[in-house]
Amino acid sequence: MYALSAEHEHPISRAFHVMNRNVLIAQPQWLGRDKMDDMRIAFASGKGGTGKTTVAVNLAYFLAYSKQQVQYLDCDVEEPNGHIFLKPHIEEMTPAQVMMPVIDKDKCTACGECVSHCQFNALVLILKDVLIFPELCHGCGLCARICPTGAIKEGKRVIGSVEQGKAFLNIDFVHGILNVGEPMAGPLIQQVKHNYKEGYIQIIDAPPGTSCPVVKTIVDADCVVMVTEPTPFALHDLKIAVSVAQTLNKPIGVVINRENGEFKPLMDYLSKNRLPILATIPEDKNIARQYSEGNIIIERLPQYIDNFMELAINIKKLLEIKQFR
Ligand code: SF4
Ligand code: SF4
Image (cartoon, rainbow, N blue to C red; front, top):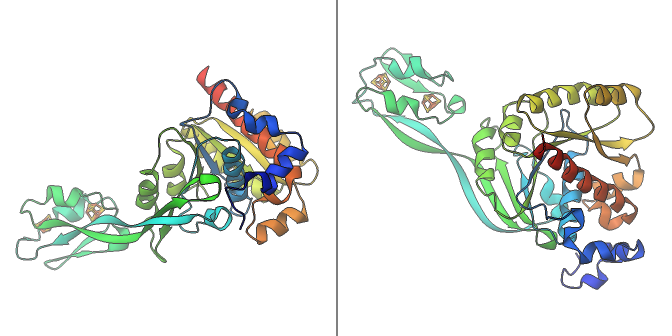
C-alpha cells in the first residue's frame, strides 16, 4: 500500500504529471464553475459482471484525487465488492435491524386481522395460533398498529450490518453486508443511504439487475450511469434497466465497458432512445489483470485517466442538462 501523505510519490500523481494534468489537480473546479458537491451518481447495470463496480470505484478515485470530497456508498449489499478496490479502514460497524412482530399469545383472540392486512403474507393463522415467517416480513409495522387487542409488539431482527470508514484519498466509505440467505436487501440499502453526507459527491454502487433493491438504490439519485458491454445479453438487460430508471424519471447516461469495435444493435438502441455515451473503456487484458488483483485501474494504468475524466465531465453535463429541462 502507498503512503497517502507522500503525494509527490504517488503513482497517479506521477501519471498526471507525465500527462501534463498537474493543472487539473491544482484547480478543484476543473469540472466547471462549481464543484460537484451534493450530487448523487448511481451506477447500475441490468446484468451482473459488466464492470459497474470497476467504473464506480475508478471514478470515485479520480474525483477524490482531483480534490473533490467523495463518498462511496456500496448498496450492492448481497455482494459488496467496492472495498476490495478502495481498501477502506473500517472505523464503525452497526448491526442492521428490521422490525419484526412479536405476538403475545395471551392477548391474541385469533381474530385474523393482522393476517388479512399483511401485504407480504408473512403471517398465517393456524387453528388459534398466528405464525410469523420472518423472511417474508418487511417490518412495516402495520400488524402491530391494527391489532385490536394490542397483542403485537415490535421486536427486532438482525439482517446484516453497515460498515463505515475511510478509503484511499480520504474517500468516505459506507457499505452494507446482508446476512447469507437473508432476502430483505431493501431495508439494509435504506440504512446504508442514511449515511449520506452533505457537501460530498456521492458515488452509489447499485445492485445488478432490475428488481426492488435497484429501485430503492437509485430512487433518490440525481442521475444513473448504466454500465454495459457490447454484447446481446448485456443489451437485453440494459434495456430493462433503462426502462426502470426512466420510470423514475432519472437522467441516464451509458458507459460502454470492454469495447472491442462497434456493436451496431447497441449503438442503434442508444441513438433511438437518445441515451448519451458518457465514456467507453476498451477491452484490455491489462485492465482485467488489475481488476483480478483488486487494483485501481487508473493508478496502475494511467493511460485510462482520460476515460474517467471524460466520464466525470459528461456526468456534469448530464446533470446540467437536467437542471435546464
Ligand atoms: S390482530 Fe392481534 S388479536 Fe387478531 S389475530 Fe392478529 S395478533 Fe391476534
Ligand atoms: S410488520 Fe408488516 S410485513 Fe411484517 S408481519 Fe407485520 S404487516 Fe406483515
